[in-house]
Amino acid sequence: MVKSAVLVVKRPGTVPRELLRALQALDMTVETWTSGQILDPAAGRAPRGDILLASSALSPQTIKAVGGRFEGVPHVVAVFADDDFDTLEPHVRGGLDYIVPPFLPVLVGARMGTCLERARAEARADLLGYERELQIGREIQRGFLPETLPTRPGWDLDVRFDPARKVAGDFYDVFELVNRRRLALVVADVCDKGVGAALFMALIRSLLRHTAEHSGLQSLIVDQAAMAGDGRVIPVVGATPLMNAVTGTNGYLTRNHMRQGYFATMFFCVLDPVTGSLIYINGGHNPPVVISGSGEPFRFLEPTGPAVGVVPDCDFSLGSVAIDVGDTLFVYTDGVTEARNGAGEFFGEERLLALLREPAASATRLLDRVETSVRGYVGKAEQSDDITMMAVHRREEE
Image 1: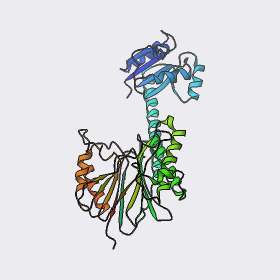
Image 2: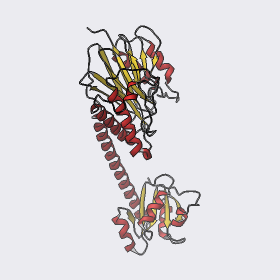
Image 3: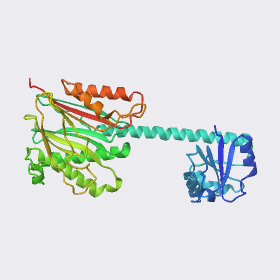
Image 4: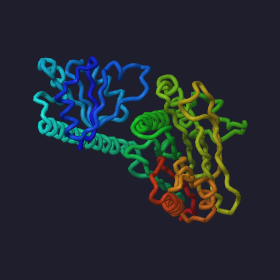
């Protein structure tokens, strides 16, 4: 139901009296403004109402600008004509509703009711169209995630992926490298959420995977690929695609997309399934945790460089760690620790580490435990961020 209206005219004193009386007879609250008053940069209060009724003497561009200055969004924008009906033509061609004399209360009320229903129908159609587009986007984005996870004797691998919206900024990937001798594993978090983050997720995932899969065994950056950040010599096989993928992606983003302001934290590692040796780059990501099967303290895989897409020509160092029999690598995005309950309190790192201290016989059981705990903590509160987790467990070969 229309309860309030804002009448906008070109000059003071040009509101049709019959229209004003008709609106008042309908028990509507009416404000009268000139377009100059609304568009004045020094104007304090902005107009507010269910319907914007603008004089057809105003140009379509002016009416659009006036609508942009509203406090909130009017349900209906319509034009009214007094004597000169020719002024209606450009507005009607532009899709605006209109009201014409005689301005009798019953006619004005019926016309505005029709305008309101049309506006609501268009809004519903727009919303349904947007929902369809988002669903298509979600299906396309799902295509960027692996349908199945590679398996290796003696290893359990599992993931959890729960977007906060229909499309996500988080992503994960698992693929084979070096003639199937290595497994590449990626967990990344593009800043922000929604459609923009999802588009950059697709771009970054594609750059990383394509570069890694098409890198030869000879490194473009041999010195860095062979050394960890502290100068230790680390396993070289797999280091080339790892280093080239991250530095190449960072270079592309900083050269071409700095102005968009999107970047990604990521953990990208290459695993030797035979020896359990793992080399990695942590680009500004929360440190993954290596959980010892023998009860030793956690090992945290700290950042070896900044987030990808932030610093041009920056150096990324390689880290390395051994995953022994019984050990589990746990990688996650900050949607886990920053999950909020109804009171707005974070799930937190302390709760997460307490869950990781309990022994788990497989990657799946560990992720089930963490997922159940996070969901229980959040309860009916709205999920505030994407949640992605990956677990890699080394067991005895059968």
